[in-house]
Length: 289
Image 1 (spheres, rainbow, N blue to C red):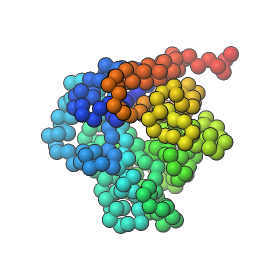
Image 2: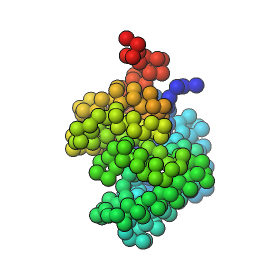
Image 3: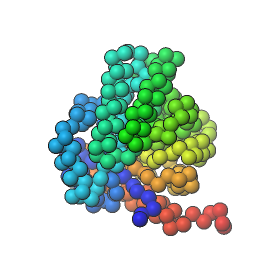
């Protein structure tokens, strides 16, 4: 069995592609699985209401192509946050949570990545943080009933931009079904901002890291930075995650209209698998030298 799996964030490919085309493109590049996006747009949120036949068809495509959907980026809570001071928005956020867990079960998704926001489009407060915690506990119960793991994404906002901050809520909820799914690019920016060390931050999540997003960033910018043009030390970050037991990784980047987008897939997967293959073969001998 392969020592690790590496996935492709769905939005790295043109949105006009069919699921089969996305799966075949990921397979051609050398990926093991796809991370499905359930963002705040009506188009992506409607996926939560897929019919039984649509779910069966998607499962069939996974078997046909050999590329499953195994993680879910659930960023729809940005618009409908679990900590909103608006009762209706909060209720919609919990409805999204429940449907996401059910969809994950049906599709075989193992990990749901949660956005680390109490609120996004409104001002946070003690009340929004209390609502957030209350609903996280309910979400963990939903996930535990279906056997689905959840992990906080470390975000670009002050609320939860480090593993250490995410772990504060993980400890409060105290469920094996709520963990941390860090974004290496985001925590790199936070480390620079706070004058701290990325590897030390990852260490705070020991035993509770379920996967890792591999994204390039530069100070103050969090999206659409091409690999190799930012400041993220992927080799040391991946090595630390590996030491902490992480064996599932996802390259997070975006299709921005480049007609040679397939080459972007090739570049991303080759860059990361070169590091991962070395670790899988025992290539980290730095402590023994």
